[in-house]
Image 1: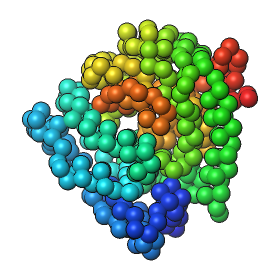
Image 2: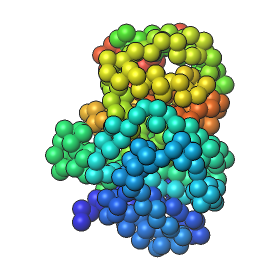
Image 3: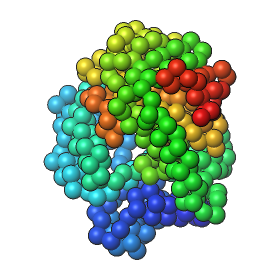
Length: 366
C-alpha cells in the first residue's frame, strides 16, 4: 500500500476531525475507497472513538435517479436523520470507478433529488454551525478522477497528495502555518463592507457588511486553501463569466455567464448545458441568489481537474456559489443546492474592497 494513504488517514483523524475518545464517527464512501476507509477505521479505534462505516454505491444511486418516483427520490430514511443528528464526526471519502455515472440523468430528476436533500442538509449545516458536528470531505485518488484530470494514475496520486501537503514530513505544521496566514486575510476582509470582482467579462459588486470570512485550512475540506463568506443576499449586482466549466453530478456546463440585479440571477447563458443551468437555477427561491463568494489560496493546485474539491482551491481564482449559504459565514440564504463556479483571476483580475485594490493578478496585495 502507498504509505501516503496511512499519512492521509492520520491527518484526517488527528487534525481535520480532531477525533477523541468516545466520539461517534461515521465514515462514508464507495467500496473503491476501502484502502483509506480501513486506515481511518483503524486509527479511530486507536483513538478510542466509535467508528461506523457506510458504503455508498453509485450504481444504486443511478437506478434510483432513473427509476424512482418523485416521492422515492425525496424520501429520507429515519436512520439517515438519526445518524446526522447524533454523530460527533463525519468523514466523506470521495472517489469512484466512474465519475460520469449521472451524466445522462434528466436535469429535472437532479432538481427533484436536490429538493429532497434539503432537510438533511439543513440539519447538517445547523449542527456544524453550532460546533456539534465536525465534518471533513476528501478524495481517494483513482483511475476515473485521473482520466478527468488528463493524468496517469501515478501523476494524479502525486497531484492529490501534494495538494494536501502530504509530501511534507509534517503536513499538519504546514496547515497550521496556512491557518495563521489566512487569519490575517480574514481579519482584514472582516473589516470591509463592499467587494467588487473585476476580470475578463466580469464586473460584480456586493455587500459583505456584517458577514464573516471563514478560514479554510484543512479541517472541513482536505485539501483546502480558501477564504469565503456569504454576501448580503440582495446586494449582488453586475455580471460574471466563469473561466472554467461548471461541474454538476458529472455533467459539464461550459462558458457560464450570469447577470445579477439586486441579488438575483436575471439572465443565465452557457455554450453547453444551458438547459441544466436554468433548471438548477429554478430549483427553489434561493437558487438564483449567491450563497458564497470565495478566493482560492492553494498554489500547489495549478491545474483544473474537473473536481471542485480541488479546483475551487486553485491559487489565483475566485469562486461563487449559487444557492445555500454556509451558516458559519452568517449568510442566511436557504436553498436545496449549493453549486460552485470558478473564475480565473491570474491575468488582469482584481478584487476591490471599499474602493481599494486588495488583490491583483491572482494574489492578495494587502
